[in-house]
Amino acid sequence: MEEIAGLARTDTFESSTSTLEQAGLDRDAFLKIFLTQLQYQDPLNPQDSAQLSAQLATFSELEQSVIQVGQLREINEHLEELIEASTRAQAPTTLDPVSLIGKRIEVKVDEIFVPGLGESIELGFDLEQSELEFLNFLALDASGAPLGLGSVSAQAGNPPSSTFAPGHYALVFQNGAPQLRAPGQDPIDLAFLPLTDLPNGELGVDLDPNAEQPVFLPGSTYGFEVEGSRSNEQRTTLDTTTSGTVTGVRIVNGFPVLIVGGQEIDPSKIVQIQ
Image 1 (tube, rainbow, N blue to C red):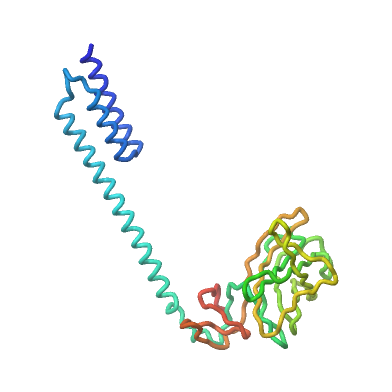
Image 2: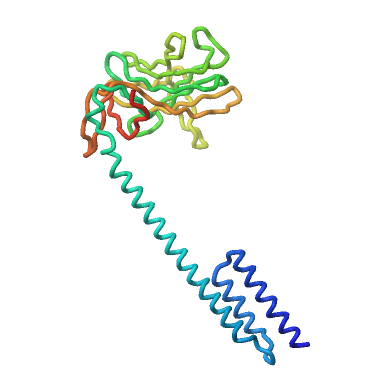
């Protein structure tokens, strides 16, 4: 009876070992099962030495596999670091900034340089859906702090509409004043209201008509976050780009920047060369 019991324990261990390998358990689990087998084996009928050697060999193979997997993971991480570093090193030389002078480019940006006179380069975005009822523009100062919020309804267009039509839109500054240009419509003047800090830490719009409105100073650069919304408060963040002709190249902190409409543009943000 004891021999049968011992045999049953051995068969169970071998089955558990196969299940362990299939489940991908670690070496500690394997060793724990192996030691448990030795502890509860039948002393009158110990496990065959050949089986014991086979199990030890299996454990050794598992140990080597764990080490190899760790080494391969380290090699893979190192290769990814080398590829990333190589990509960064080659990026500035992939495109010659000087060769772009005189060419028109489209760049992914989120800021506008406000000129004293004339028109700024546009901060453009495309609407591929017609369900948006409002467009909101969050202005940021040079430090990235919220400065003011401008919001315009589709009803403010000429002609008015319940939603904004699909197409290309642009935020521009005309002689220092912000305007929204919509496809097929006259420019819409934007009024930016100051922001207030709410008790819960969020930002709210100060609707007090006597409050001091944000002032966009000529010769300064301001960031903008643009989003569309519906009456049910669903909001969509919109990617903004600008386009213009490269008029020069300047070195800033050891790296070249493009001059487009008086604004410095990072060449890595180019999305299209026209």
